[in-house]
Image 1 (tube, rainbow, N blue to C red):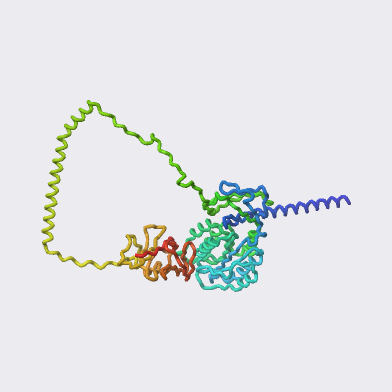
Image 2: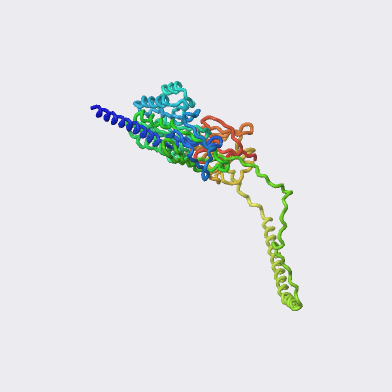
Length: 521
């Protein structure tokens, strides 16, 4: 009886051991399955690659940029939890009344779950959006502030420009110049009321070339399946997850997925100066980790390195090599013998009559030309003696349509009498043969409406898009467009804002980019 008890205990111990091993292996497998690159950034000539799902790397791991393998001193790796700030989470809520009221409490639950599960070195920014994003706070890790903002969100009767808002947000992130990983979470029913803004294909291509993690949480209702599918396609373009709140997905499912982004390793690479040429290069990471061996690939636009001074030899010390005598062909005339001399004289005698014939013909032609000119002058004199005819009055000059903004001007530079002392030239940099040329004393208005000083026939340009003002000899740009946006030197000028612009500066309106020039006549 005693021996059977001992055997039974052994089997139980073995079973417990195997269970522990199974759980450990399963957890490692699950952890490793989530291993992927979250984001790649360039900051201060260094490359930051955020990889989730791994806890560390061994010394035999390798990193290759283009065709060059990085040396160990060029690589450093830091777990997310050891960084001061490793991640920023930007949350955007569609607070239009198109969101069913039954989903309001569910949205609040998801938002508070994201905040409560955030790590200490993660910052969160919350905003709503309609025609454009309206931020309710800056990036912060203060949970009290964030929860109070969540409680204050109200829903309004307004349009929603989802594609334009997302495109503009990514553009703004590109200008921030930070190494921190930034992810975007969008809660919406997918409604997009702007039909002349960025197309869905344009947004998807933009996301693919600027791969920020973009999570979308969609709320179904009647007849919005296609809109939700479009919104989810933005997440697929970013290679991240999306969630349909149809009753089968819970807030816990969403939080568990988002939680996987919080564990990983950030690699900082210092590339060789020879690689800093501004080109797009591939990066290959072969990593050996506790979770297994992984191979990751990403692409990055390399920074520009500094140009080293090239020492050249002074001109006075450079001695020019003498040209080889053989380089210049020498033609030496062959002396004529007496026979050749006699032949030459004979040929001259034969050519003598021919020469006189040419001279005679030239004289005849000259006499004929003189006679022709004489008769032409005589006829002209008779005509001048006749009374002058009464000419009709010249028509009034037609004002150039460009001044009214109907169409661009393609001809040469304008006359002083027409334009005055100063005029503004707006050149289309994408279609070089199109430019606008208008006088400017104070303000020039630009838009799609025919009443504007410069009318641009572009569906992505607002009817009253912007204006350029001449003040104190300087030019200023003010944006009027709420939806389509105006960019100066690739920086968004917000609605109502006015910024100074330089002569030759570049403005982006609609589909095209324009240069601005102020010219004295």
